[in-house]
Length: 150
Image 1 (cartoon, rainbow, N blue to C red):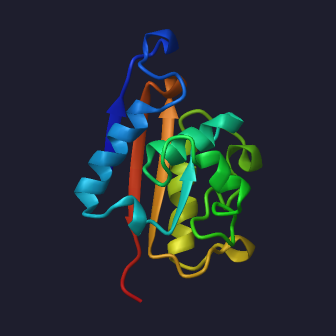
Image 2: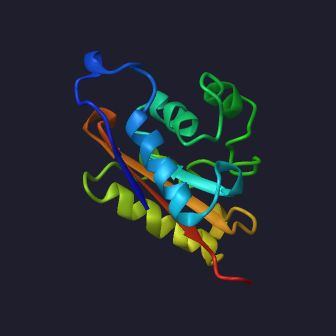
């Protein structure tokens, strides 16, 4: 698990469309887990607004800045894509209960890793990542889960 923070006011940030708190949290989580973005098989990200998924996937290191949108448009992040993002449907698919969003992500990913996700099952994922944020991106938590050897 990694935690990161940034300024609350958008106008005080270096870049208004990047998520520095998420980048910091991800760097810490990757270091603790001993993995890189390329080791992640699927993710649930905090897509509270349409642009939030794109900003998150870039901040997590899955795509270079400005490439999250094209990757999504090309199907890379689709449930059958190379890196499924929000196979659950994300916040649009399940709602956005403040405080419970991150917990829901972790539960959904644990089901994926246990092969218990039913019609939403994403192949045979071994590593999954949950990213949640608050305060317009001023705080972020990244959790990495790894399946037991199968």
